[in-house]
Length: 139
Image (cartoon, rainbow, N blue to C red; front, side, top):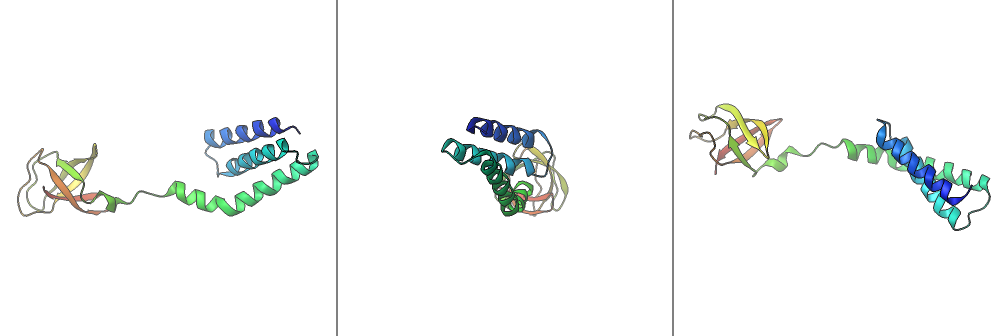
């Protein structure tokens, strides 16, 4: 098979991976086809050697990298990184009261962690996060 057909196969498999909710199988075989296309351009042997290399590289990449890539794609951002960020209450909050606040342009459930009342629109800092509740104090 000529090198450019391998490249087309590789790009096609990568597009299939993007367009389908798959299990990352087409990704690794798409990369394998691109690798074999590059090797075919350099003069990799007859067609059976290319197909063997395609299968071997695809299975090797799948076995070595699928779980790592899958876990990277599913990783949730750490909510602890929100500590110290600026939040603005959407309503007045008495000490210890829970209400709504805006953080990074999104509404959050917020608890007043200070001993003073917070007014609507007041600049506050996030002091801790528990699940999806931010605890805020005046700046």
